[in-house]
Amino acid sequence: MTMGEQARGRAPRVYSGLPRWLFVPAALGATLVVLPLFALTTRLDWTRFFELITSDSSMAALRLSLETSVASTVICIVLGVPLALVLAREQFPGQALVRTLVLLPLVLPPVVGGIALLYTFGRRGLLAPVMDLFGIQIAFSTAAVVIAQSFVALPFLVVSLEGTLRTVGRRYELVAATLGARPSTVLGRITLPLVLPGLVSAAVLSFARALGEFGATLTFAGSLQGVTRTLPLEIYLQRVTDPDAAIALSLVLIAVAVAVTLVTARISDRAIG
Amino acid sequence: MSLQFSATLARRHFDAELQVADGERVAVLGHNGSGKSTLLNILAGTLRPDSGTASLDGTRLFDLNAGHRHWLAPHARGISLMAQDPLLFPHLSVIENVAFGPRVTGASKSQAYAKAEEWLEQVGVTEFAQRRPSQLSGGQAQRVAIARALAAEPKLLLLDEPMAALDVAVAPLLRRVLGRLLQHQATVVVTHDLLDALLLSERIIVFDQGRVAESGPTDEVLRHPRTRFTARIAGLNLVRGRYADGGVRTDTGLVVQGTHRDDEVPGAGEPAAAVFAPAAVSIFAHPPEGSPRNSLPVTIIELEPRGDLVRVRGDDHHGHSLAADVTPLSVAELDLYPGREVTYSLKAAAVTIYPL
Image (cartoon, rainbow over all chains, first blue to last red; front, side):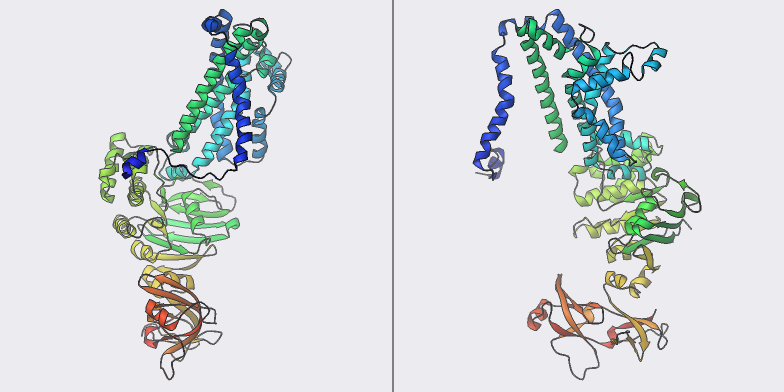
């Protein structure tokens, strides 16, 4: 066998050094995640699948979900990229506290986030006097959905991008500066291109989080068809009245989530390569 | 005078002052942690000193003395930095890397590319213009980094150990390229390497513990080192003491006999230095008797291969670590090993003595 043939063959097996019993809990862990997804597909009425996901209420929910998730992803990028840059590159007093607070929605129950948003943007919230002045009503509107999704999704983008920025480091930026590039030029021509793969995967992550948002949306935005009733809310409602529709819509969400995960993995693989 | 610089930074124990003349090339030598990197970072504008002032070609870089708070950002200084790692922007092609400096300082795209091509030709890598940095070898990448730094037309170029990361086979060629291109470029080069200092500088500044310990014309400093660090860089052994009867006597009583030039006569009892090359030393298992030569009893500290020779480091019990270069055959015949007591022997004619 020549070297070329060997190189094209299967990767050689390398001794992993793992104890055999470890495969039992590992398999159980995988089952815990995969089995319920499988169970869902067994209960699906495939003959009515297309009809179920194209009903008026389903289509309205799907459209609303996509529109609001795209909008909140844009907000996450516009606000999250600068936030990640400041956290990764600057040093200021209270930085650790700011980071902890900003990342809080990652671990906070979404319903708590929804209540917090209600007391910020709601009719009697913290910003109510300002909003009354301009005649703005946010709670229980589509804007509220976007705010709720941005609230829960922003930390995903920030924590992921901050990690990428730290990995890339400051050295290229410093070289660019000593070559005469102003800070905005360095940001646009060096920093952002270098972290672009990380930024894309961070944005995809926050899009996925926004798409699945339920608790904060329900609390802060309510459930009005075509206005605030996103796909997860629709699924929750249909679960009682039409379980088949709920299952079909769940599968749509799962398909989107799988696609998102695959794309993200592909991008981060390429970034590493 | 092109560069005037003085700065202090307490947290790094840095307190130094230096000047670089128009077009002058200065080599900065020093141990790790002696303040060389701090100097480069303060000059480049990536580190802010506690106090001090600096100006370059009449432009004030910073003025932090007596309540002033003037500070120029790195991009506005006209100072390029080239490190031992080429740090080519990985998402840009070779020519885009070199054109980066001219482009961001206002040149049109065609001007910037024309200039980049010129510099790529100067460093001899035109054929790689369209490649990505990841497709270059270490030496090629460092050539591109030189072109990129020079295409920005810096008033002052900072080189941080530019050869340290390169193969021994590649470094000499690159050193020649740098020597040719930097002839009239004001440069501060930080290095550990004697050849870098000799070929890339007219003047040497030796840093020690954040301060300038020694400074002068390159050949002068290397020929007549005043500190042991400089002597070590220059590849020489240095013994400091006072001049007495044709030799240098240390406070502890060690005497090294030598010769001095007619125009460098040390006064009797005045501070003087004796230097000698490791190659001038012979090693004996027992002190040779009735010899007119210097005999220095030492304990061997370490043996280190150096090309065809072995460098022996010996402790002379007077606080010096003295080097001797011998053949591997002698090492075997004399059975040399760390801890063994031997005698270094060298002719007085091989020792140069000069006043300090």
